[in-house]
Image 1: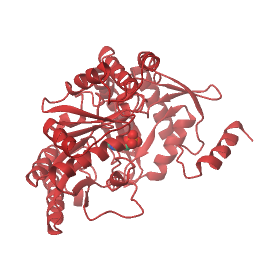
Image 2: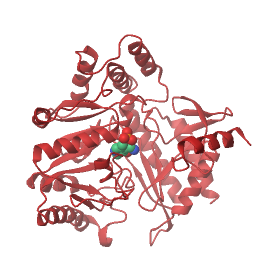
Image 3: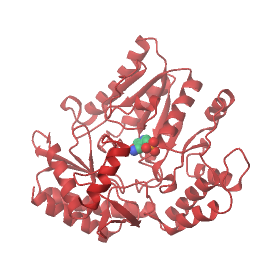
Image 4: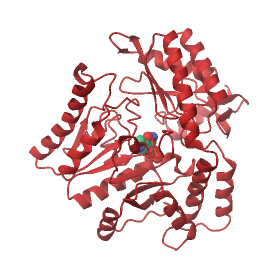
Amino acid sequence: MSSIDALLERRYRVLGRNSPLFYERPLHLVRGEGVWLWDDAGRRYLDAYNNVPHVGHCHPHVVQAIAKQAATLNTHTRYLHEGIVAYAERLTATFDPSLSMLMLACTGSEANELALRIANVTSGGEGVICTNFAYHGNTRAVAQISTVFPPPEGFGPHIRAIPPPDSYRGLRGLSGTALEDAYVGEVRAAIESLAAQGIRLAAMLVCTLFSSEGLPHVPPGFMRRAVDLVRKAGGLYIADEVQGGFGRTGRHMWGHEQYGVVPDLVTLGKPMGNGHPISGVVGRADLIQEFGGKVMYFNTFGGNPVSCAAASAVLDVIQNEKLQENARVIGDYVVAGLERLAQRHSIIGEVRGKGMFFAADLVRDRATRAPAGAEAKRVINMMRDRGVLISRIGPHDNILKIRPPMPFTKEHADLLLATLDDVLGRL
Ligand code: PMP
């Protein structure tokens, strides 16, 4: 038995066979640095998938900040601590001035759970609009809007999932303004159907990049018009920035900025501590104050001094290494490269990019746009065998998901593109 098989067997015994693992041949990773990962045999992989190590795996500035604070003091947010307050000031300064307060937690799931509770308490409503094929986390309330994995208990009467706004596989074959109108119509219909059941709207909660949904090109006026309707019905706009935040989109610090609509609440997670568990809700002061006056919310580990040191170090690196700018420049370079691959490989139906986040919609036939899910699965496994890590997303699991750590360079991009070219040529 190989060492991988032996570890796998032990894992199955203690974690069960349903604990998810990537790839047909699981990877046994032992070390990371920058955009590179090494397995137990010393083989190096280019990480073009992971967004948690936002500023690079094991970035020394973040590692040192964690180590220094862990060696000094680690308590929780019920004591005064300079580092916690300074981080909150620094983080909220990157948002629209109306988003001036922060609540801290540990995971993206907790941040979304908290944002939903704030919306419930402050709006007096229960109804939530989300999208199909979305992922927002694993708590009981948030599983109700993580529609990509329908919960066994089913969806409650307060949930309305609308189709994600997608210009490629447009609703009813529509395009242009008719398509935008149709998606806005879905939001209107969701609000009306909640009202018909006597359920008041609390919020619309969506990922700012619709990332699990496939990173679609969103009809330009959709978000503005959708949020207008939500607010008129008394609901809040909650922007999930767990994937789209911290400069990922290149042109903005926060994914929601691309739509020109300021959210009421914003949820943050994964990249926030570069792997150290910290998450948060940034929101309007009136909402957070009202919620805090009615609900005693405390999170033992959320935003402790070590977590805030890690998160603050992440902001340092984003600034010092100009990573948002890098996401824009390298992002454009990768998109151009993927477009060139699309000219050579007809399986690529559409290329999508938002800064340092890319998707390629694989199709069996460009005319029918029939999704190539099985082929996408082969591609990611073949990429892994050739030392490049990517994944796949979307309702048909046919969309390549490429979302590297932010310090991805032209050389890394060239390796990614050359490997993908080779793999697509061998399908
Ligand atoms: N929101 C989005 C958009 C996510 O991608 C994820 C995690 N993939 C979450 C929320 C949940 O975060 P966590 O796993 O930290 O609970």
